Amino acid sequence: MGLLPDVHSALFGSISPTDLIATAGRALLLGHVLWILAYGLILARSARAGLLGIPLAAIILNISWEALLYSNCAGVGLRDLCGPGLSGEWSLALSFILGLDILLLAQAFVLTASVSGPSRTALVFVVALVVVYVLHANLIGLTLDYRGLVDSWIMNAIMSALFVRLALGRPNGEGLSWLAALAKFLGSQMVTLGLWIAPEPYALTGVRSVVVYGLAAVVAGLDLWYIGLLWRRLPPHERAA
Figure (tube, rainbow, N blue to C red):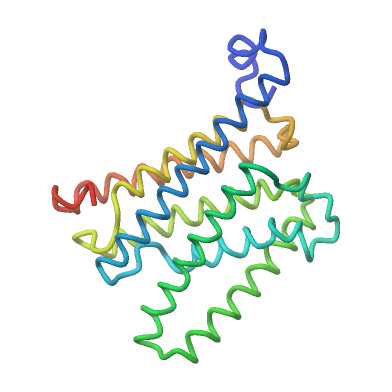
């Protein structure tokens, strides 16, 4: 079952499928809560520093993917690829994440428009959101990516790489949050754990599982690199900011 089947069987073989899915669901939900914490910390740190605390491309990637999921895969040929509709705590969690991403986008707009002008910035933002949404929809549709899972991990890996690039360009970690970096890392690991515990609801088998877990390993490595960079570059009193 999924990655490391013998270990999985030894740990969870005596647990009923219903309880297994419930346990996986709690791990996945905790991962999303940690991401909400990360976005909140980034938003606060960016506001204090007057600098973007998250790469703009990451915000565009996130919002367009979340909008696709919320619209039940509008623009994807096979709408069933989105899986069952979100409800309860999952709908609430995604609402928080989408809301924070919109706030981050608004913050990025204000900071960027102060340099490039509001009209030009608005045009670039709108075009970027539309183009990336179309790319998400086509990737999910062409690869039959159920629930956009592979797409989401590709996006997560790109975002982690962009965070590292951002940190390398700021010698003193200006505007960046070490706590947010830690929360993002832990959130991704909890999601990986949840997917490993119960991969069936996400059709996580064969090559698809190798791709997802491979991307998860890349994300973990990049996130640890980012955490280490900020630990070395941020003054001690700012690491908990």
